Image 1 (cartoon, rainbow, N blue to C red):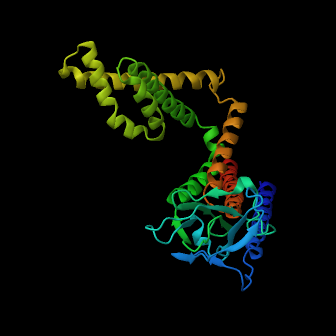
Image 2 (cartoon, rainbow, N blue to C red):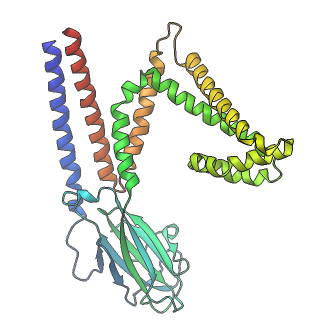
Image 3 (cartoon, rainbow, N blue to C red):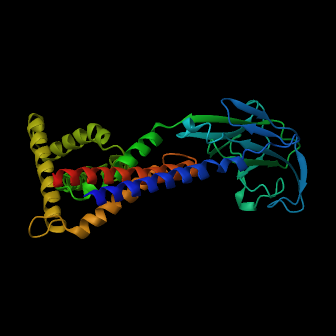
Length: 358
């Protein structure tokens, strides 16, 4: 037991050192994008309510998509935060907006190119990268730690009627993705060998499938079912609870009226139907687990558990990568989640070995 515990401690120490080294290397990446801008360069720094009014613009000839024409262009450098000093902005995102200064003035037609290629000359983005400023406004997302270039061009006489503004926003769902991703990654091995997880998840999926089948068949009996089906089925996937609350009572009442059942029978029939749907879905999930997951002796199939564990880890990794708009910080979060989950698995395994040898 002593040698196994020692090997676990050594592997954990190596993993922690590797994580710290990787974090240091990744956090030092923004130093290249935080260089001091030249004094002649027009720039915006990510900050609350940052606004920059555009000038008339500089003439540029033969801009891609405008052969033989002279257009007025302007380039704005947008600088983000330092990652090391502003980790609190992990779940934030920035919106860069190009809009008119005065809504009562007719704005000229303009196009925007939002890119990172500093080697391109102003107004020389490829033709497919230009986006039109539609209805006097254009919005583009970026990481609050990034450095990007905003090229604006117009064939009119001036760009002075436009302004560039920056809005920073916090997204709670990114924090939820991070927490749930790390928890799922840490519990992947445990969940893949838990009968409660298999039966519970299979029964929930079975209940949802039975409900959707009933809805699909019931909608055929309603005169306006075709259109409502196209609307409510996707809605049921996004917000199933909200869908149940608003739509099912009306659909059941319509079905009862078509069949000729009295309104007083509505509540008893709803309760019996709900119980039947739940039991049918639970039975379907139970049958699937018995046929596809368990072996003849009642234990979980090893290959199935291995596949489920890695499926949970991959899904958790995707959730962690969605926890930040900055790819560098998202990668750091993913590596941290992998190392933390590995250390937690080893700690629980160590405690199990200690109890076993006692």
